[in-house]
Image 1 (cartoon, rainbow, N blue to C red):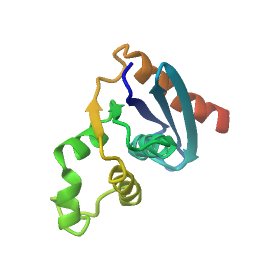
Image 2 (image 1 turned 135 degrees about the vertical axis):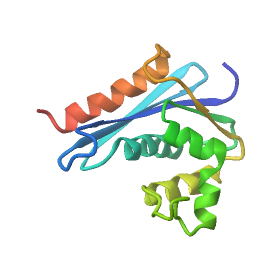
Image 3 (image 1 turned 120 degrees about the vertical axis):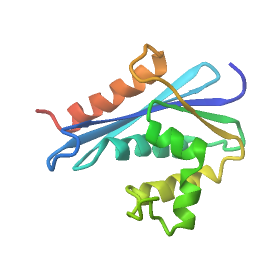
Image 4 (image 1 turned 180 degrees about the vertical axis):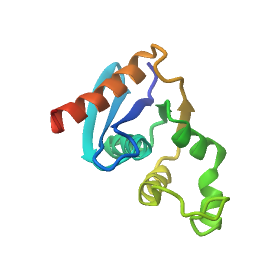
Length: 153
């Protein structure tokens, strides 16, 4: 593996879109053959919030921000926003969508964009979910395990 950091991140939410839901996030950071796993969970959240939080928490873990960092996610919401620059339009429109509605998860987008600016060589990649990509599957399991650990049923 070259001198770069790979991050696989994922979010999960039980009862997504309902009041009493439980969400979890997980991420795997890979560097020089070693893997670091992180995860967490929250009440009353959404799958998209957990996807963003997984990425944020993973990037906050990176110590050497000068290294190339590649983030892999199965979230179209996260990947498309960053790859296609949706956030630029949101910023120009005062954090309103094209439909003139407030951008959801603005607080997390602001955190992520501030972090993004601290990485000179940061790339985002969309991967297919649940398609046997080892580290993406592990991030998914971490997110689900975090829900069960913090909120056992």
